[in-house]
Amino acid sequence: MRWRFILNILGILLFFFGLTMIFPLMVGLYYRDQSLIPLLESMAGTVIAGLTLYFVFRKAKAEVINQREGMAFVTAGWTAVGLFGALPFFFGDGSFTFTDAVFESVSGFTTTGASVLTNIEAVSKGLLFWRSFIQWLGGMGIIVLSVAILPFLGVGGMQLYKAEVPSPVPDKLKPRIRDTAMILWKVYALISLLQVLMLMFGGMSLYDALCHTFTTMPTGGFSTKNSSIAHFNSVYFDCVLIFFMLLAGINFSLHYQMLRGKPLAFWQDSECRFFIGAVVLITLVVSLNVFGSVYATIGEALQYGAFQVVSIITTTGFATADYEQWPAMSQLILLLCMFIGASAGSTGGGMKCLRIMLCFKYCYKELFSLIHPHAVSHVKIAGKPVPNDVMHSVLGFLALYVGLFALSAVLLAGLGVDFTTSFSAVAATIGNIGPGFGMVGPVENYAQIPFFGKWLLIWCMLLGRLEIFTVIILVVPEFWRK
Image (cartoon, rainbow, N blue to C red; front, side):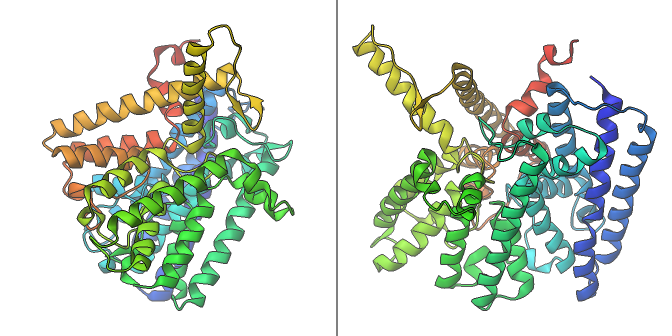
C-alpha cells in the first residue's frame, strides 16, 4: 500500500475542497452574518492542510492506482472531507460540540440528512448554505469530481470510479473515465439549475431555492426550515420536489441518454420500470390507508402519501407530514421503503432496486430449479445473463447490509436507546435517509442520541454511502497483506 502516494492525492482533494468554502463565504458576506470568521478559518485550515499533504508527499508519484489503493483512498477521502467539513459548524456560534459538528458534516456529505439541530432557522444563513452545499457535493460524489481533476495531474481514476459509483456494474458512458465523470456532473448541474428555476417560479426565494435544490438532487433532505417542506404548505412545491426526487432516484446515465434524444431509455431500463412501478404501487397503498383515517379527501391523501413515499424510497428525507401519526400499516411500509432505496447509478441510498430485483430473480431461479432440477436457468437483466461474480457480489452485499444493520441496531439499543428508535435510526442512517421513527421521527432530530451512539451512526452513514464493501474491506486482515 503506497500510503505516501495516497496522502499526496488526498492533499489535492482537500485543497480543492477547501476552495469550495468560498461559496458559503460569499453568502455570509452578502447577509453579513456571523458565519464569516468560522468559514474563513475553516477554509484556511483546509487549504493549508491540503497543500501540506501535497508538498510533503509530492515525490510519491505513480501513474496507476490499484484497486486496494482506490478503496483506501475513497474511504480516507470521505472521512477527511467529513472531518474538515465539520470545521465551519465547530467554529460557528458555539452550538455544536465536536461530535455534533462531525455528525452534521458526515450526514451532509453522505446525503443522509440526519440532523442534530433543534432550531435550524436560528443558524446563520452562511452555515445553512454550507450545510446544503455539502450535500450537493456529496450527491454525485467528491471522489467522482476528483476523477475529473486527477487525470490532469497524471493520476489514473478507473479504480476510484469503480469504488465510489453506487452500482453493482458501473456504467462507463465514455471510454475515458474523466469524460464519464464530467458528463455526470454536467447532467447533475443542469437538472439542479432547472429545479432552482421551477422553485423560484413558485415564489420561493433564490436562497431557499438553491438550498433545497442542493438537498433534493443528492437526495439529502436538509432544509432551511424547522418544519422542513411542510413550512411552505404548497401543493406546487410538493409536486416539484416529488418530480425532482424521482429524477434524482433514477440512474443518471439514463438522464444522459434522454438528453441525447433517447426518451425511451427510461422505459427500456428494467430497473427504472421496477423503481417507478414500486413508487406508484406503494403510493396508492399508503394513500388509500391514510384516506379517511388521517385525511378527509383523496386529493390530500395522495398529496401527502406520495410525498412521504417518494421522499423515503429515494432516501431524500424531506417531510410534509408527521407519518408517526399515520396507521401502523403505512408506518411499516415506509420503514420497509428505507431498505429498498433508489436506483443504482443514482444519488439515492439504500440497498438499491437493482439488487432487490436480482435477489428476487435469484430466488425464483432456485424455486424453478427445485421443480426442474435438470433444467439450465440463469438470472437475467434486460435479456442478458448476469455473471456469477456479479450475482455473488450482490448476495454478499445484501448479507453484509442486513448483518451490519442488525449489529448496529443491537449496539445502539445497548446504549439505552429504545427499540423503535434503535431500529429506525440505524435503518435511516445506513440507508442514508435521515428521519426515522421514535426519537428520530420526522418532527424530531438526532440531538438526544448518546455520544457513542452518534459515532456509531456516523459509521453507519459512511457504510451506506460507500456501498458497504469499500469501507468494511478495510477491517479484513488480508487487505493489508502484500
